[in-house]
Image (tube, rainbow, N blue to C red; front, side, top):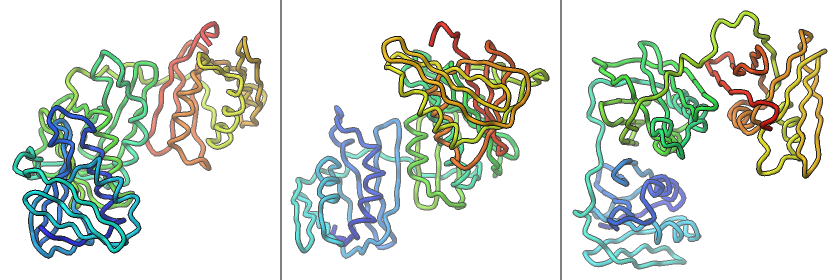
Length: 372
C-alpha cells in the first residue's frame, strides 16, 4: 500500500477513529486502526468489540491500494506534531513508513487479517433524522447518565421511536433529561421496547457527526444499533437492563405550580458567583423567588456564605427550593447563553421542571435544606 494524505484532515478522522481503540487491551490488535485504501476511496476502521466505527478519509491519493494496521499510540503524536502539510504512508509486509519533507517515522507492521470485522450499514428499515437534530438530542441528555451506578440501564441514553420523531431520555436517579426531535421512519420498523445506548457510544456518535442538516440513518436492533452519516458508520451494543419508568416521575398537570422564565446566561453567571463559597462537599443552593427577584444563597461552615440577586419577571407568591447547583449548571451549559427557559416550581418538596420551547425537559429533584 502507498498513499499520500493531507495531514490535518487525516489527523481529524484518525483521532475520531482512535478514540474507539482501547489504550491497553488483552488483544493488542484492538489498539490499532485499520486502513483500507482502494481506488474508490480510503476508509479507517476501529473497534473495541463493544463499539465499532467506519470512517471515510478525504483528500487521499492512492498510488497503490492495500490494507494496514496503524498503531494509535505511536502514529497520533507524530501526526499532531509534524509540520508537513502532506505525508506519504507506504506499507510493506514488515514495516510502515510515514514520511514528509521534514519528518519520517518507521513502525513495525502487523498482519491486517488479525483485525476483527466491523459492521457495515446494510439495513433496509431505519429512522432518518437530521445530523444537527441527533447531535442536539445527544448533547442535551447524555450528561445526565450515571456510569457509576450498579443499575446498568442508567449508564446509557434511552431512545424511543415514534412515527414522527425520536425521544431521548437520560437519568441518574436524581435528575432526568428528555429531548424530542423530528425524524422519519423508513421501511418496516420493529424496535425493542428498551433501546438504551451506552454513554460512551452516544458521545462518540455526537463527536462523529457534522453539525449540519445532512441525513443520518439510525437502525436499532435487538442487541445493537447502527448509525450512518455519509461515509461514517458507528456500531454499538446496547445496554442490558430496564430503564426506569421515566414518565411516572416527569411532572405533568400541576395547576398550582408557578411558571418562571429565566435568562440562561445571567442565571449561569449568578450561580457561578454564589458557589465561590462552596467546598467539595457542598451541593445545595437556595433559590428564592419573590417580588421580581431571584435570590441565590449558599452557605459553607468553613468558608462563608453568599447571596446573589437576579431581577426576573415574577411577582407571584414567594417560593423557595434548594437544588444541586451542579445539576443546574449542567443544564445551562447545553443551552444558548442568550436564550431563556421556563422553570416550573410547586413547592420545596416537589421536583423542579425546566423546559424550553423546542421540546427539551429537565427534571431536578430538590434537596432538603439540612442536606446542603
